[in-house]
Image 1 (tube, rainbow, N blue to C red):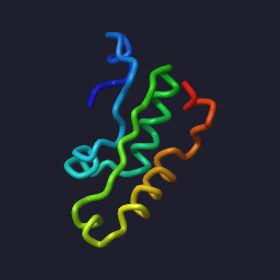
Image 2 (cartoon, one colour; image 1 turned 180 degrees about the horizontal axis):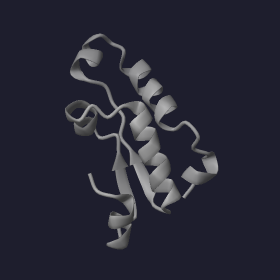
Image 3 (cartoon, one colour; image 1 turned 180 degrees about the vertical axis):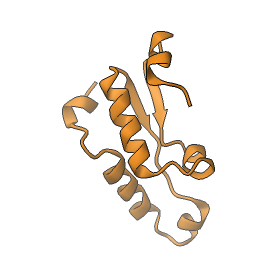
Image 4 (cartoon, rainbow, N blue to C red; image 1 turned 90 degrees about the vertical axis):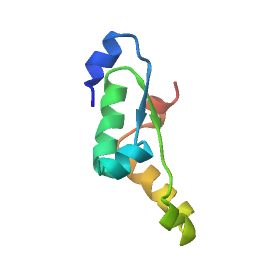
Length: 85
């Protein structure tokens, strides 16, 4: 992990949040991803929110529900205006 201020200082404009590897290998929760999304926005950068199901969730045919839940939780407190740019 790298501080948002560090990546901004080298000119990064877009930041991945919620990548599947972070979700599985580092057990990033939706709450943690939401905090990252809001931090990126607060720093004036643009989050790229990654969502998606696991193989098991795909096989259980609950991929739409999983993705909808991730979107709902990961974007808590984020306004439409913040995401327009």
